[in-house]
Amino acid sequence: MEVENQLSTWDGYVDWKNKPAVRGKHGGMLAASFVLVVEVLENLAYLANASNLVLYLTEFMHFSPTDSANSVTNFMGTAFLLALLGGFLSDAFFTTYHIYLISAVIEFLGLVILTVQARSGSLKPPKCNPATPNIPCQQVHGAKAAMLFLGLYLVALGLGGIKGSLPSHGAEQFDENTPRGRKQRSTFFNYFVFCLSCGALFAVTLVVWIEDNKGWEWGFGISTLTILLSIPIFFGGSTFYRNKIPNGSPLTTIFKVLVAAMLNSCMARSPSNAIESMATSPSPTPPSKQEGSIENHDKVEETYESPSRSLKFLNRAVVNIPAFDALKCSVQQVEDVKIVIRILPIFICTFMLNCCLAQLSTFSVQQAATMNTKLGSLKVPPASLPVFPVIFIMILAPLYDHLIIPFARRVTKSETGITHLQRIGVGLVLSIVAMAVAALVEIKRKRVAANSGLHDSTKPLPISFFWIALQYLFLGSADLFTLAGLLEFFFTEAPVSMRSLATSLSWASLAMGYYLSTVIVSIVNNVTGDSKHKPWLSGRNLNHYHLERFYWLMCALSTLNFLHYLFWAVRYKYRSKGSNK
Image (cartoon, rainbow, N blue to C red; front, side):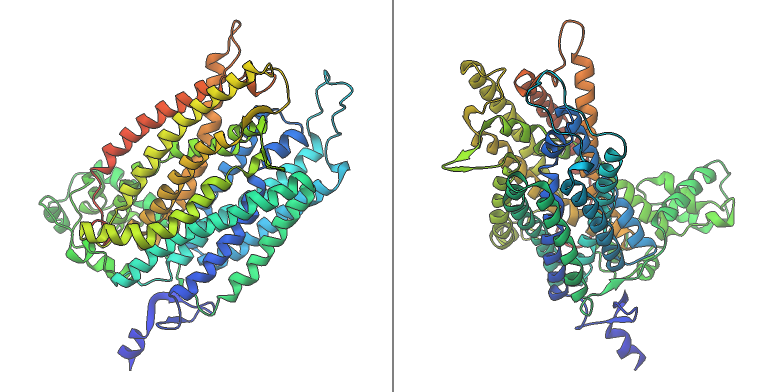
C-alpha cells in the first residue's frame, strides 16, 4: 500500500493546501493554462505604462528626453533585476504560488498610487506656459517626485516577484521524466512568450490610445484593474497546481561551496581521504545525470559518487577535510554550483541584446514622435509601434511550435530539433541587423528633416513612422528567439533546487541590458562632448542628436558580443535530457 501511495503522488510537490500532490489530479497542461491566461493580464498591466512611460515623464513630469529615457531604463532594469529576489524566495522559503499572489498585490498598490497622481492635477508639476517658450518647464520635485517614484518602484517590486515566479510555476506543472512531458514544457515556454505578446498587443494599442486621448489616469486605472483581475484567475487554478517544496537557500549552497573550496585549497590534502583518490582520476558523469532523468534532489545526490573533472578547483570543497563542520559539502552540492558557473557566461552574453531592446522604449519612441504617425484618418500613438513585433511574435510563435520544431526534429532526429543555444544565437544575430537598420532609418529621418526645413521645428516630419517599424520588427523577432530559449535553457539546465532563481536570470538579463543602456548613453555623452562639440545624445530636439552614430556603436558592440557568445556556446555541454539529443 505504501509503494502504491508513493507512486500516486508527485515526490517533492504539494498542492495548495500543503498536502502531497497527486498524479493525474495536479499538474499538466490544464494547470499551466491558468498561468498562460494570467501572463496575458500581467504583461498588459505592465507594458501598457512602460511602453509609453517615457512620454508621460517628458510631457507631464517635464523630464528632459535624456533624463526620461534614463528614468525609464532604470525603472525597467530594477523591475527585472528584482526577479532574482522573486526566484530566490520561491526556491528558498516560499512556493512560486505564494510569491505570485504576494507580488501581484504589491504591484496593485503601486498602480493605485500612480493612478491617483495622474488623476489629480495638484499632485503633478504645473503645466508649461506656451506663452513663454524660452522659460523651461518645472520638473517634478519634492513630495510629488517621491510619490511618483514610490508608485513606480512598488510596481517594479511586484513585477519582479511575478517575473521570478510565474514562468517557473507554469513549467513545474510538467513531468520532465517523460518525452511527452518535456515536449509539453517546451510548448509551454513558446506559448508563454505568445501570451506575453497578447498582453502587449492590447497594451500598446488600446491602452496607449486611451492614455494619449483620454488621459493617463485611465491608462493607469486599466492596468490597476487588470492586475487585480489576474489574482482571482490565478487563484482559480489552485486545485490543479502542483507546487515544488522549497529546498532552502540556493545562495547558501553556492557560498558554502565557494568558501570551502578556497579554504581547503590552503590546507594540505589528506592522503587518507577516500574521495580524493577518486577525484584525481577521470570520473564520468553517471548516465542518470546525463539523461536528466531524476525527479528530486535526494535522488540526484545518490547518483554522484565523486566530483567531475570540470572546474576542478571546486573539487577541493570535498576532497579535503573541511576546516569547519559548517563548510562540509556533498559532491552533489559541488556539482550544482558547477552547473550554475557554466551557465553564467551564456547569461552575460545576452546583456547586449537587451541593451538594444531598451532602445525600443526610449529613443525609438521619441523618433516616432517626430514623424508622421497618421494611418489614413487615424493618428497612431508613437508608443503603439511595438504592435509590429508583437503581431509578428503572435504569428511566429505557433508556427515555430507546430511547424518549425516538428520539421527540425525530423531533420535532426533529436527531441528538441533546435537546441536552446542555437535559438539564442539566432536572436543575437537579429539584434545586430536591427541596430544596423535603426542607424540607416535615422540617417533617412534626419535627411528628410533637413530637406524639409524642419530641423528646428516640432512639427511632424513628412516621413511615415512605418520606417521605425523595421527596427521594431527585427528586435521583436530577436526577443522571441532569445527570451523563450533563455527561459527553457535556464529551467532545464539548472539544478532542481535552483530552478526559479535560474529562470529569473532571463529577466535579470533584461535588467542588466537596461542598466547597460543607461551607462552607455552616459559614457557616449561624456566622451563625445567637449568645448567644441556637443554630445551625440544632446540638443534642443532629437534632430540635433547624432542618434545614428549611437546606433552604429550599438551594432558594433552587438557584433563583438555575438563572437563572445560563440566562444562559450560551442564549448557548452548540456546536462539535461533532450536538450541536445
